Length: 222
Image (cartoon, rainbow, N blue to C red; front, top):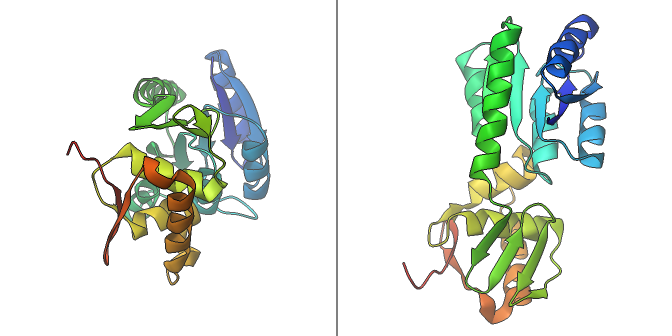
């Protein structure tokens, strides 16, 4: 059983989704607008979000951005918007699937279960790099077994770097994933957080700057 949040403003379609997903054994919470979806998602742990794009108050893209800024929850966009442009924008935000309406409920259940299986298999709870241990469930960081206090943004940046040690993580990727489009004109905010990470982790990790591109963790074995 998975805990699933449905963000859908059509009450009849929302009820249909709830009935089928509950019959498939999942625990469902629903929201009728984007703001409520964000508030609910950030207050409760979910295994997956089924997200309409055309929501009142906040559209689905903004809902996804705000939730993903603090939690790495799998997202399936379920929408009547079928253009390639909309789909590309969704996948640029690292969504897990994009499904256009109408869709058979049987197929939808299969896609939901596939994303849930893939997520469980592909996301380790603990990521280790040299002396650093990062727990993706508890959102904690330890160096040589000692806890290190990072802000939410610092934690998110370190997580992105630790996913691919030795590889360059661009400023654009960090801004897209963590802050969103409104920070495109101010990449200095990333530089400031990198400086703080370096201070807090001291000699445990070396974050190299790749001028004009981004950052990478120095892995001496690479």
